Amino acid sequence: MDTSITTEVIITAPVATVWDAFTTPADIKRWSALSDESQATECTVNLREGGKFHLRMKSQGEDPGSNFEGTITKLVPHSLLELSLGDRTASVQFERLGENVGVTVVFNAESEDSIADEQQLSLMILQNFARYVQHDN
Image: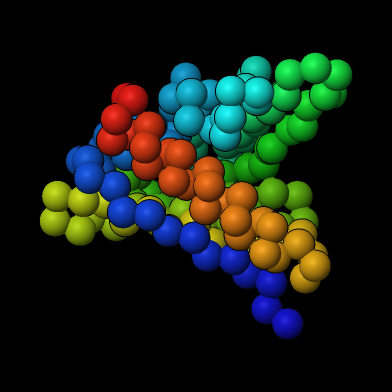
C-alpha cells in the first residue's frame, strides 16, 4: 500500500515571501505551533543541500517536547525543498500561480495505520502556515 501523503494550499503572496517564511527559523517558530498550548522552543535551518534543520516543539505543562529534524537533500530556491527525515523523505514544492503560490508537501507516513492522522496534522500545519504568511507576517 502507498503510504505517501500529499497536502497543499494556495497562498496569496509573492513566492519570495512564501519561501522566506517557510525557511527562516524566526518565521518557522511563529507558524509551526498549532495552538496557544504549544510552541516552538528551538529552530535552526542550514539552508543548503546537505544542511541540517531542527525544530523543537513543546506543549505547556509536563510535556517533554518533541523534535523534528533532518537533512536538506535538494534545494532549488523559491521552488523546491527535498528532505531526509531519518528513514522517511519529504518534498515541498513552491509553484507560482499568477499572484498566488501553490505549496505542495509530499511525505511518507510513519505507518499505514497513521495515514489519516498524519494527513490531517500536515494539512493543519500547512493551513496555519498560509494564515501566517497572508495575515501575520
